[in-house]
Image (cartoon, rainbow, N blue to C red; front, side, top):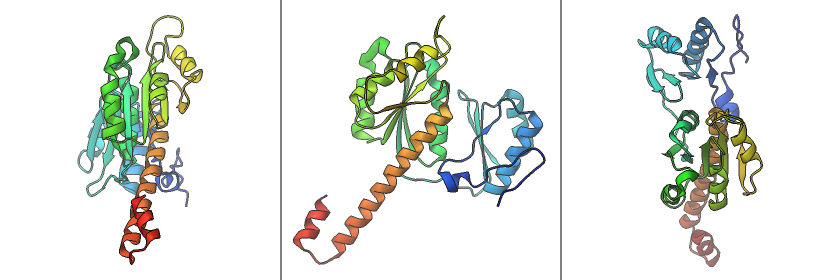
Length: 256
């Protein structure tokens, strides 16, 4: 059932329907409206997620909700998560790796990481491994693919936006390119990075809009959680097979 309030119609069932929780974009909202919307989600769902939070709104959130909610702050991304006592963040088994070309790309990457965590994924991050010193990339990428066995990679880059293409040419998992507003002069607001990623010849890469960490996180979380569900189904099937009397066919299935 849809709930309507004076100035907002909150999508309270989005996480259950879509697999991606609602994120309140605070930028452009009045302080009153942002606090009211956060309060609705906190009361109804036990959690409120806000992005692009101003210093004034951060102070307002503490003032309004400190008494009844835990406050988690992502400083680089200016994102906040409020949760009521007893709220449990889901754990899905999805695994997401996040790389950045430079430390200036961290705010967008942290925004993506925040949402992936709220979607129940384990998140592995390594920052500042861009093409200006490409040797820095190889060990973190190997760890993510071989040790952590991530399901998907988010790669944030500004400037020439080359790193996602390099990673996509090496990795056997989907790569999400996240262009950032980092650079100089012509194309320096992320346009050059966006065009470079869109024109990539490395297969297996998708691209979100400039600075859209939420979009990158949502896509990565959906992929990772789908993979986690498939792994769980495979384990359950293997357990069922092992519980049956041994046959040649069951032995082959169990090996797989």
